[in-house]
Image (cartoon, rainbow, N blue to C red; front, side):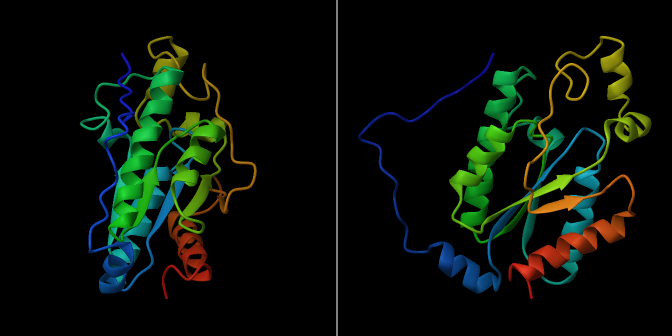
Length: 205
């Protein structure tokens, strides 16, 4: 059952603290951003995001990697995989990513996030320039061949319902900030393309 709690009480207001995003970013010497990796299961989202986080850490930047499986162990453990629950899952992650960006972090988010509308909702939570959509562009055929968790095999056998790419739609980005041809390039090349994008947007030096 989906849990969707929204604050409607007019007596609740946002409390502005003295230490703000600008100060937190200044002491970290970096610009906050949410780098949102989207793509099919098995496309390589978490692998690329992990490689990017390692590279950023070596360069001295402050990051946090949000991974689809990890958040379902806690924050979203009450959600299933219906369309409604998937949207609520992404809504929660978007709000969490927003708070982490407010803390001055470079946030790397690796989620299938199959619907364009839900990705746009996350983008709309953030100021202009603080959301970078990265499409991990790997074909369904390649993902099925990889099948690192055996999920496609189970989905095709009817053991998993509402599986993206099999019996649930995936809507690829129409104009991603970065289109990674992940089925044809090595991880280090894909990670370098991510670094180049961050440099071109002056997120990192």
